[in-house]
Image 1 (cartoon, each protein chain N blue to C red):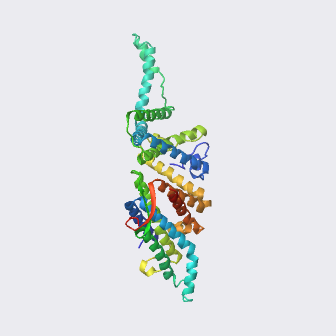
Image 2 (image 1 turned 45 degrees about the vertical axis):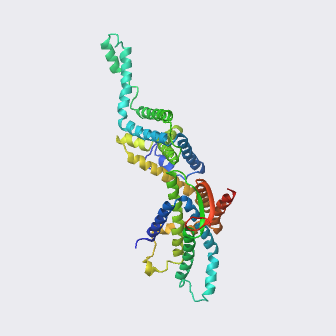
Image 3 (image 1 turned 120 degrees about the vertical axis):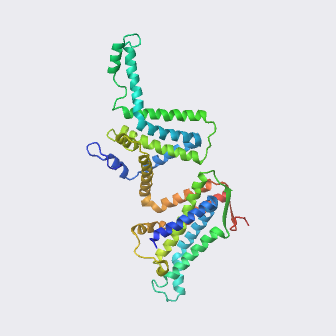
Length: 248
Length: 178
């Protein structure tokens, strides 16, 4: 999927995006992004984050596969408004029905994608707010961090192409939404592949970035990792002991 | 026997599983011992080899004593690692974090130890041109993947052996400061 889509007179933007070496600011932004969602997850709590994650993924899948229902409902609103304005509630039914059938769609084929995206964003924000109000006890543990990162990765996949479109108007929306819209099928497989792809690309680019200063970078990484592990031990105490673990 | 990288991946996975069973707090103590062992072996490697050449009195040609050298270096490393796991060792106590963070840390620290141990043994096999081929069934040449992996074996990672002891010292200083 990636690396094959072209737009803008043959400029392969997505391919360029995937194969370009990771810049340090880019890497830091990505890590900051994940760190932000991890911290948000920790603060929000495991159960609330889980519900937000399920809603985000489930809502996206439903909207992409059954989005036509919501579009039809909204367009029925347009017809009803025209019906009322045509005097349908005051007895002038023939003209009212005519006006209703001639009423323009609020959501057209060209604005369908944007409408469903907006609906999805509103749904996730609403559930985020609602879960915070209804669920009183939500543990602040490792699960909360994991669900937070999961939410971050999912939101990245949905938002990143649209943000790119905002700043580079010729950029094509890629990833799960496009594939689903084009094929008309819900593809969890595409979502998982994209998630794995995103992580794989990050590691590859990170490796390419540190390669020129590999020994020092690896030393820093190793030290930071061990410090992190040490930090994750409550009241750590070091002592020499036998193999049984009893101090001598 | 399959490609050599499969064997060392298997060894690494087994050590990771041991790490999972022991928990990351105890594994961290073993990691520090392994890093110290790597420092000692890489720092004194050339000196040990020079001493061995003096001792053999010119009996060994360039490759004839590779098996002996491998046994000495891998043996020294194995003894230190074994001491780190089962002997008088650095013991770290404390309370672990909640699941699933604990599980992830157990896996991560276990995998690090697995990589350090199996990678170092592989390094010495490669350094001394894969001795005991009749016993191990090793067949050259290595696969393309294995040749790429050689540069990432632990003793090949750092130009300076002192790098191995830096994290150990930092952690020990932090533990003394509390």
